[in-house]
Each structure stands twice: as C-alpha cells, then as structure tokens.
Amino acid sequence: MKKQKTAYPRVQLDGKWYVIIAEDEFRALTQPRNPSSKNDALHVMNISDQRLADRLLERRQEAELTQKDLARLAGIRVETLNRIEKGRTTPDFKTIRKLVIAINKYKKTE
Image (tube, rainbow, N blue to C red; front, side, top):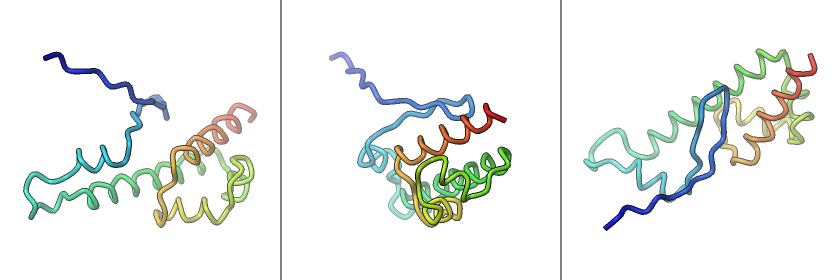
C-alpha cells in the first residue's frame, strides 16, 4: 500500500519554512509515548508559544516599531499584540501573517 502524501499550507518566516497543520493533528504528534513524561503536548506547546512571543518581540524591536505602531500597521488591537508578546495568548495563523507582513512592509519602506 502506497503512503498518501498530504499537502499542508506553508509559510516562510525569516527564511525558514513552517508547515501549518490542524491542531488535532499537532496534538496527536506531540502526545507523549510515556504518559508520565514531562514532554506532554501542553509543555511542548508552551515552549513553542514562548518562542513565538520572543521572536515577534525581537522582530518588532529590530524594526524599531512600538507596539502601538505595529498593531496599527497589522490591523489588530494593541492589547492583543501586548498579550501575544507576553505569551499570554497564542495568535491564530491569520494574526501571525498580518504581523509578519506589517513588519516586512515597514522594513522595506525605511
């Protein structure tokens, strides 16, 4: 039996490609093999969320944008951006895309 290829949407951020998968598939992939393992899905996801928050903050600061400016350029609320950068909320793909596009456009106009 041939293994069926599954196409997933991809996005490139800072020259690195990421694959977008359904959350239930992600959770299945990150389930621990050993239930007593500390590397459960929640732990893995929290590390990923914090990395995203840190990277977004870093890119915003490199572009010399305030939270207010980036939020305005991306069309999101400044409170939302603040929660994302503090790791208090995980943005959906649409919001991440808005933020990346806004930073990239701003950098090109400098």
